[in-house]
Image 1 (cartoon, rainbow, N blue to C red):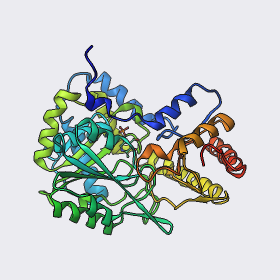
Image 2: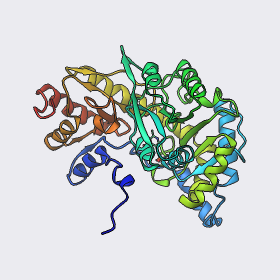
Image 3: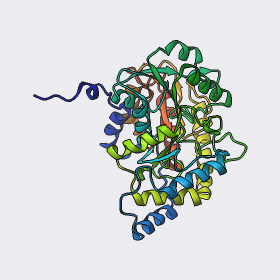
Image 4: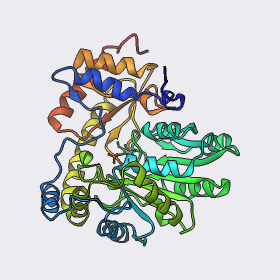
Length: 396
Ligand SMILES: Cc1ncc(COP(=O)(O)O)c(C=O)c1O
Protein backbone atom coordinates (compact mmCIF):
# COMPACT_ATOMS: atom_id res chain seq x y z
CA UNK A 1 0.00 0.00 0.00
CA UNK A 2 1.36 3.48 -0.78
CA UNK A 3 2.70 5.11 2.37
CA UNK A 4 2.88 8.69 3.53
CA UNK A 5 6.33 10.12 2.88
CA UNK A 6 8.84 9.41 5.67
CA UNK A 7 9.89 13.05 5.66
CA UNK A 8 6.42 14.18 6.69
CA UNK A 9 5.71 11.23 9.00
CA UNK A 10 8.67 12.41 11.05
CA UNK A 11 7.20 15.89 11.59
CA UNK A 12 6.24 15.84 15.28
CA UNK A 13 2.70 16.46 16.52
CA UNK A 14 2.05 19.64 18.48
CA UNK A 15 1.90 18.76 22.19
CA UNK A 16 -0.04 21.95 22.82
CA UNK A 17 -2.65 21.03 20.23
CA UNK A 18 -2.93 17.58 21.89
CA UNK A 19 -3.76 19.25 25.19
CA UNK A 20 -6.06 21.80 23.56
CA UNK A 21 -8.02 18.98 21.96
CA UNK A 22 -8.72 17.44 25.37
CA UNK A 23 -9.71 20.89 26.66
CA UNK A 24 -12.02 21.54 23.72
CA UNK A 25 -14.02 18.44 24.56
CA UNK A 26 -14.71 19.86 28.06
CA UNK A 27 -17.07 22.59 29.25
CA UNK A 28 -16.21 25.57 31.39
CA UNK A 29 -12.45 25.58 30.76
CA UNK A 30 -10.48 28.77 31.45
CA UNK A 31 -8.53 28.69 28.21
CA UNK A 32 -5.05 30.15 28.36
CA UNK A 33 -3.30 27.68 26.07
CA UNK A 34 -3.61 29.35 22.67
CA UNK A 35 -1.57 32.35 21.58
CA UNK A 36 -4.30 34.82 20.84
CA UNK A 37 -6.22 37.61 22.46
CA UNK A 38 -9.92 37.05 22.97
CA UNK A 39 -10.61 40.62 21.88
CA UNK A 40 -12.44 40.71 18.55
CA UNK A 41 -10.85 42.35 15.52
CA UNK A 42 -11.43 46.14 15.81
CA UNK A 43 -14.57 47.31 14.05
CA UNK A 44 -12.79 49.68 11.63
CA UNK A 45 -10.73 46.76 10.29
CA UNK A 46 -13.85 44.65 9.70
CA UNK A 47 -15.47 47.59 7.95
CA UNK A 48 -12.42 48.05 5.74
CA UNK A 49 -12.75 44.41 4.65
CA UNK A 50 -16.45 44.87 3.87
CA UNK A 51 -15.68 48.01 1.88
CA UNK A 52 -12.92 46.19 0.03
CA UNK A 53 -15.30 43.39 -0.94
CA UNK A 54 -17.85 45.95 -2.16
CA UNK A 55 -15.07 47.70 -4.11
CA UNK A 56 -14.19 44.49 -5.93
CA UNK A 57 -11.20 43.18 -3.97
CA UNK A 58 -12.39 39.65 -4.60
CA UNK A 59 -10.00 38.79 -7.43
CA UNK A 60 -6.42 37.50 -7.49
CA UNK A 61 -3.71 39.96 -6.51
CA UNK A 62 0.04 40.00 -7.21
CA UNK A 63 1.91 37.03 -5.67
CA UNK A 64 3.88 39.53 -3.56
CA UNK A 65 0.63 41.12 -2.38
CA UNK A 66 -1.08 44.41 -3.17
CA UNK A 67 1.44 47.19 -3.92
CA UNK A 68 -0.58 49.53 -1.69
CA UNK A 69 -0.19 47.22 1.32
CA UNK A 70 3.55 46.85 0.66
CA UNK A 71 3.81 50.64 0.55
CA UNK A 72 1.87 50.84 3.82
CA UNK A 73 4.33 48.43 5.46
CA UNK A 74 7.32 50.41 4.16
CA UNK A 75 5.75 53.60 5.55
CA UNK A 76 5.20 51.94 8.93
CA UNK A 77 8.87 50.83 9.05
CA UNK A 78 10.00 54.38 8.23
CA UNK A 79 7.69 55.87 10.88
CA UNK A 80 8.18 53.36 13.67
CA UNK A 81 11.64 51.92 13.09
CA UNK A 82 13.42 54.57 11.05
CA UNK A 83 14.17 51.88 8.47
CA UNK A 84 13.87 52.56 4.73
CA UNK A 85 12.57 49.62 2.69
CA UNK A 86 11.86 49.23 -0.99
CA UNK A 87 8.22 48.10 -1.06
CA UNK A 88 8.53 46.71 -4.59
CA UNK A 89 11.59 44.57 -3.95
CA UNK A 90 12.07 43.86 -0.25
CA UNK A 91 8.58 43.10 1.09
CA UNK A 92 6.42 40.07 0.32
CA UNK A 93 2.90 39.75 1.69
CA UNK A 94 2.06 36.24 2.86
CA UNK A 95 -1.07 34.50 4.07
CA UNK A 96 0.06 34.76 7.74
CA UNK A 97 3.23 34.82 9.76
CA UNK A 98 3.50 31.05 9.63
CA UNK A 99 3.38 31.13 5.84
CA UNK A 100 6.11 33.79 5.83
CA UNK A 101 8.19 31.49 8.00
CA UNK A 102 7.39 28.57 5.73
CA UNK A 103 8.30 30.21 2.45
CA UNK A 104 11.34 31.90 4.02
CA UNK A 105 12.69 28.59 5.32
CA UNK A 106 11.94 26.82 2.03
CA UNK A 107 13.99 29.45 0.22
CA UNK A 108 17.14 28.87 2.24
CA UNK A 109 17.35 25.16 3.12
CA UNK A 110 18.24 22.20 0.95
CA UNK A 111 17.51 18.65 2.14
CA UNK A 112 20.11 17.60 4.72
CA UNK A 113 21.04 21.18 5.65
CA UNK A 114 21.07 22.12 9.31
CA UNK A 115 19.21 24.94 11.03
CA UNK A 116 19.94 26.34 14.47
CA UNK A 117 16.79 27.31 16.32
CA UNK A 118 16.79 29.23 19.62
CA UNK A 119 14.36 27.58 22.03
CA UNK A 120 12.06 27.35 23.95
CA UNK A 121 10.19 28.56 20.88
CA UNK A 122 6.89 28.29 19.11
CA UNK A 123 7.34 24.81 17.57
CA UNK A 124 6.33 25.71 14.02
CA UNK A 125 9.80 26.95 13.05
CA UNK A 126 11.40 23.59 13.87
CA UNK A 127 8.57 21.64 12.22
CA UNK A 128 8.88 23.66 9.01
CA UNK A 129 12.62 22.89 8.95
CA UNK A 130 11.67 19.19 9.26
CA UNK A 131 9.18 19.55 6.42
CA UNK A 132 12.00 20.93 4.25
CA UNK A 133 13.90 17.65 4.89
CA UNK A 134 16.49 19.56 6.85
CA UNK A 135 17.85 18.97 10.35
CA UNK A 136 16.96 21.07 13.40
CA UNK A 137 19.47 21.78 16.14
CA UNK A 138 17.76 23.48 19.04
CA UNK A 139 19.87 25.74 21.22
CA UNK A 140 18.09 26.68 24.46
CA UNK A 141 18.25 30.15 25.97
CA UNK A 142 19.99 30.30 29.34
CA UNK A 143 18.29 31.68 32.41
CA UNK A 144 20.83 33.95 34.11
CA UNK A 145 19.37 35.45 37.29
CA UNK A 146 15.99 36.75 36.22
CA UNK A 147 16.81 37.21 32.52
CA UNK A 148 17.00 34.86 29.59
CA UNK A 149 20.14 35.19 27.47
CA UNK A 150 21.43 33.70 24.22
CA UNK A 151 23.90 30.88 24.76
CA UNK A 152 26.53 31.95 22.23
CA UNK A 153 28.95 29.22 23.37
CA UNK A 154 26.30 26.60 22.60
CA UNK A 155 25.67 28.23 19.19
CA UNK A 156 29.40 28.05 18.41
CA UNK A 157 29.41 24.39 19.45
CA UNK A 158 26.35 23.56 17.32
CA UNK A 159 27.41 25.14 14.04
CA UNK A 160 28.79 22.74 11.38
CA UNK A 161 29.67 23.05 7.69
CA UNK A 162 26.06 21.96 6.92
CA UNK A 163 24.51 24.81 8.93
CA UNK A 164 22.64 27.28 6.72
CA UNK A 165 20.20 29.03 9.00
CA UNK A 166 19.80 30.55 12.45
CA UNK A 167 16.21 31.23 13.56
CA UNK A 168 15.26 33.25 16.61
CA UNK A 169 12.10 34.94 17.90
CA UNK A 170 12.04 38.32 19.63
CA UNK A 171 9.83 39.04 21.50
CA UNK A 172 9.76 35.35 22.21
CA UNK A 173 6.85 33.01 22.31
CA UNK A 174 6.81 31.51 24.99
CA UNK A 175 9.44 33.40 27.03
CA UNK A 176 8.50 37.03 26.46
CA UNK A 177 12.28 37.54 26.17
CA UNK A 178 13.35 40.44 23.96
CA UNK A 179 16.76 40.46 22.25
CA UNK A 180 18.91 43.37 23.46
CA UNK A 181 20.88 45.49 20.98
CA UNK A 182 23.94 43.56 22.04
CA UNK A 183 22.16 40.23 21.39
CA UNK A 184 21.14 41.49 17.93
CA UNK A 185 24.72 42.59 17.13
CA UNK A 186 26.09 39.24 18.21
CA UNK A 187 23.42 37.19 16.39
CA UNK A 188 24.03 39.16 13.22
CA UNK A 189 27.80 38.89 13.66
CA UNK A 190 27.50 35.13 14.20
CA UNK A 191 25.38 34.71 11.06
CA UNK A 192 27.78 36.82 8.98
CA UNK A 193 30.84 34.98 10.30
CA UNK A 194 29.49 31.53 9.42
CA UNK A 195 27.71 32.57 6.21
CA UNK A 196 24.24 31.73 7.58
CA UNK A 197 20.81 33.08 6.86
CA UNK A 198 19.35 34.78 9.89
CA UNK A 199 15.57 34.64 10.31
CA UNK A 200 14.18 36.98 12.94
CA UNK A 201 10.58 36.26 13.86
CA UNK A 202 9.34 39.67 14.98
CA UNK A 203 5.59 39.04 14.95
CA UNK A 204 5.25 40.34 18.52
CA UNK A 205 7.32 43.51 18.05
CA UNK A 206 4.41 45.86 18.89
CA UNK A 207 3.64 44.04 22.14
CA UNK A 208 6.47 45.62 24.10
CA UNK A 209 6.42 46.88 27.68
CA UNK A 210 9.98 48.10 28.21
CA UNK A 211 10.19 50.92 25.69
CA UNK A 212 10.40 54.61 26.56
CA UNK A 213 6.66 54.79 25.96
CA UNK A 214 3.96 52.14 25.62
CA UNK A 215 3.28 51.60 21.91
CA UNK A 216 6.90 51.91 20.89
CA UNK A 217 7.92 48.76 19.02
CA UNK A 218 10.89 46.59 19.89
CA UNK A 219 13.76 47.92 17.74
CA UNK A 220 13.88 45.66 14.68
CA UNK A 221 17.03 43.81 13.63
CA UNK A 222 16.47 45.65 10.32
CA UNK A 223 17.92 48.79 11.94
CA UNK A 224 21.27 47.00 11.90
CA UNK A 225 21.04 45.17 8.61
CA UNK A 226 22.87 46.11 5.40
CA UNK A 227 20.98 45.67 2.14
CA UNK A 228 23.15 42.68 1.19
CA UNK A 229 22.79 40.89 4.56
CA UNK A 230 21.20 37.45 4.46
CA UNK A 231 18.42 38.40 6.87
CA UNK A 232 14.71 37.64 6.75
CA UNK A 233 12.23 39.27 9.10
CA UNK A 234 8.96 37.39 9.53
CA UNK A 235 5.90 39.39 10.51
CA UNK A 236 2.15 39.16 10.92
CA UNK A 237 -1.01 41.17 11.49
CA UNK A 238 -2.40 38.47 13.79
CA UNK A 239 -1.13 39.61 17.17
CA UNK A 240 -0.99 43.42 17.03
CA UNK A 241 -4.43 43.86 15.49
CA UNK A 242 -6.36 40.82 16.81
CA UNK A 243 -6.47 39.39 13.29
CA UNK A 244 -5.49 35.74 13.86
CA UNK A 245 -8.27 34.42 11.64
CA UNK A 246 -7.57 36.76 8.74
CA UNK A 247 -4.27 35.15 7.73
CA UNK A 248 -2.16 38.08 6.64
CA UNK A 249 1.57 38.39 7.30
CA UNK A 250 4.69 39.36 5.44
CA UNK A 251 8.40 38.97 5.17
CA UNK A 252 11.12 41.53 4.64
CA UNK A 253 14.28 40.25 3.01
CA UNK A 254 17.15 40.78 0.66
CA UNK A 255 15.93 41.44 -2.87
CA UNK A 256 16.85 38.03 -4.35
CA UNK A 257 15.18 36.16 -1.48
CA UNK A 258 12.06 38.32 -1.74
CA UNK A 259 11.87 37.62 -5.48
CA UNK A 260 12.15 33.85 -4.94
CA UNK A 261 9.59 33.89 -2.11
CA UNK A 262 7.22 35.80 -4.40
CA UNK A 263 7.62 33.16 -7.08
CA UNK A 264 7.13 30.26 -4.62
CA UNK A 265 4.03 31.93 -3.23
CA UNK A 266 2.41 31.18 -6.58
CA UNK A 267 2.73 27.44 -5.89
CA UNK A 268 1.86 27.53 -2.21
CA UNK A 269 -1.01 29.97 -1.73
CA UNK A 270 -0.80 32.44 -4.65
CA UNK A 271 -1.32 35.32 -2.22
CA UNK A 272 -3.14 36.39 0.93
CA UNK A 273 -6.91 36.99 0.52
CA UNK A 274 -7.44 40.25 -1.38
CA UNK A 275 -9.95 41.91 0.97
CA UNK A 276 -7.94 40.77 4.02
CA UNK A 277 -4.94 42.60 2.55
CA UNK A 278 -7.05 45.78 2.30
CA UNK A 279 -8.14 45.29 5.91
CA UNK A 280 -4.48 44.96 6.91
CA UNK A 281 -3.79 48.25 5.16
CA UNK A 282 -6.45 49.90 7.31
CA UNK A 283 -4.99 48.30 10.45
CA UNK A 284 -1.60 49.84 9.72
CA UNK A 285 -2.98 53.24 8.86
CA UNK A 286 -5.48 53.64 11.72
CA UNK A 287 -4.63 50.99 14.31
CA UNK A 288 -2.51 52.92 16.81
CA UNK A 289 -5.32 53.91 19.16
CA UNK A 290 -6.75 50.41 19.50
CA UNK A 291 -3.24 49.01 19.85
CA UNK A 292 -2.46 51.38 22.73
CA UNK A 293 -5.67 50.38 24.52
CA UNK A 294 -4.79 46.71 24.07
CA UNK A 295 -1.27 47.27 25.40
CA UNK A 296 -2.59 48.99 28.53
CA UNK A 297 -4.85 46.02 29.14
CA UNK A 298 -2.07 43.51 28.47
CA UNK A 299 0.28 45.25 30.92
CA UNK A 300 -2.35 45.09 33.66
CA UNK A 301 -2.94 41.41 32.87
CA UNK A 302 0.75 40.64 32.85
CA UNK A 303 1.23 42.24 36.25
CA UNK A 304 -1.82 40.53 37.70
CA UNK A 305 -0.48 37.11 36.65
CA UNK A 306 3.11 37.91 37.65
CA UNK A 307 2.01 38.98 41.13
CA UNK A 308 -0.05 35.84 41.56
CA UNK A 309 2.75 33.56 40.31
CA UNK A 310 5.36 35.18 42.53
CA UNK A 311 3.31 34.19 45.58
CA UNK A 312 3.23 30.53 44.58
CA UNK A 313 5.80 28.20 46.10
CA UNK A 314 8.57 26.76 43.91
CA UNK A 315 7.94 29.04 40.92
CA UNK A 316 10.65 30.97 39.07
CA UNK A 317 9.33 33.61 36.75
CA UNK A 318 11.53 36.13 34.94
CA UNK A 319 9.71 39.35 34.06
CA UNK A 320 8.99 39.28 30.34
CA UNK A 321 9.40 42.46 28.26
CA UNK A 322 7.23 41.52 25.31
CA UNK A 323 4.54 39.32 23.69
CA UNK A 324 1.66 38.10 25.89
CA UNK A 325 3.04 35.03 27.58
CA UNK A 326 4.45 33.99 30.92
CA UNK A 327 6.60 30.90 31.17
CA UNK A 328 6.99 30.02 34.83
CA UNK A 329 9.40 27.27 35.74
CA UNK A 330 7.99 24.91 38.38
CA UNK A 331 10.47 23.38 40.77
CA UNK A 332 10.74 19.60 40.46
CA UNK A 333 8.47 19.40 37.41
CA UNK A 334 9.62 16.77 34.93
CA UNK A 335 6.44 16.14 32.90
CA UNK A 336 4.73 19.39 31.97
CA UNK A 337 2.20 17.56 29.78
CA UNK A 338 1.01 15.40 32.68
CA UNK A 339 0.94 18.51 34.87
CA UNK A 340 -1.20 20.44 32.39
CA UNK A 341 -3.54 17.50 31.82
CA UNK A 342 -4.13 17.04 35.53
CA UNK A 343 -4.53 20.79 36.07
CA UNK A 344 -7.09 20.80 33.27
CA UNK A 345 -9.14 17.84 34.48
CA UNK A 346 -9.06 18.82 38.16
CA UNK A 347 -9.41 22.60 37.93
CA UNK A 348 -10.53 23.35 34.35
CA UNK A 349 -7.58 25.64 33.75
CA UNK A 350 -5.99 25.11 30.33
CA UNK A 351 -2.29 25.98 30.04
CA UNK A 352 0.27 24.99 27.39
CA UNK A 353 2.88 22.43 28.49
CA UNK A 354 6.47 23.72 28.32
CA UNK A 355 7.57 20.53 26.57
CA UNK A 356 5.67 21.74 23.47
CA UNK A 357 8.27 24.48 22.98
CA UNK A 358 11.33 22.31 22.43
CA UNK A 359 14.63 22.11 24.25
CA UNK A 360 14.65 24.00 27.52
CA UNK A 361 10.85 24.02 27.73
CA UNK A 362 10.25 20.98 29.94
CA UNK A 363 9.68 21.92 33.57
CA UNK A 364 7.68 25.03 32.65
CA UNK A 365 4.16 25.90 31.52
CA UNK A 366 3.02 28.71 29.24
CA UNK A 367 0.27 31.08 30.25
CA UNK A 368 -1.22 33.37 27.61
CA UNK A 369 -2.45 36.44 29.50
CA UNK A 370 -4.33 38.05 26.62
CA UNK A 371 -7.67 37.01 28.15
CA UNK A 372 -10.12 39.01 30.28
CA UNK A 373 -9.49 39.61 33.95
CA UNK A 374 -12.59 37.55 34.70
CA UNK A 375 -10.76 34.53 33.27
CA UNK A 376 -7.25 35.30 34.49
CA UNK A 377 -8.15 35.90 38.14
CA UNK A 378 -9.87 32.57 38.80
CA UNK A 379 -7.28 30.77 36.65
CA UNK A 380 -4.42 32.11 38.78
CA UNK A 381 -6.29 31.30 41.96
CA UNK A 382 -6.92 27.71 40.87
CA UNK A 383 -3.35 27.28 39.63
CA UNK A 384 -2.08 28.59 42.97
CA UNK A 385 -4.18 26.08 44.91
CA UNK A 386 -3.10 23.27 42.59
CA UNK A 387 0.60 24.11 42.99
CA UNK A 388 0.17 24.54 46.76
CA UNK A 389 -1.45 21.14 47.07
CA UNK A 390 1.78 19.50 45.97
CA UNK A 391 0.94 19.06 42.28
CA UNK A 392 0.54 15.79 40.54
CA UNK A 393 2.80 12.93 41.51
CA UNK A 394 2.87 11.91 37.84
CA UNK A 395 4.31 15.25 36.81
CA UNK A 396 7.28 15.26 39.18
C1 LIG B 1 6.47 33.29 17.31
C2 LIG B 1 5.36 33.24 16.34
N1 LIG B 1 5.61 33.46 15.05
C3 LIG B 1 4.65 33.44 14.12
C4 LIG B 1 3.35 33.20 14.47
C5 LIG B 1 2.38 33.15 13.36
O1 LIG B 1 1.24 33.86 13.47
P1 LIG B 1 0.20 33.87 12.27
O2 LIG B 1 0.45 32.67 11.44
O3 LIG B 1 -1.15 33.87 12.89
O4 LIG B 1 0.47 35.12 11.51
C6 LIG B 1 3.03 32.93 15.80
C7 LIG B 1 1.65 32.59 16.21
O5 LIG B 1 1.39 32.13 17.29
C8 LIG B 1 4.05 32.98 16.76
O6 LIG B 1 3.82 32.75 18.06
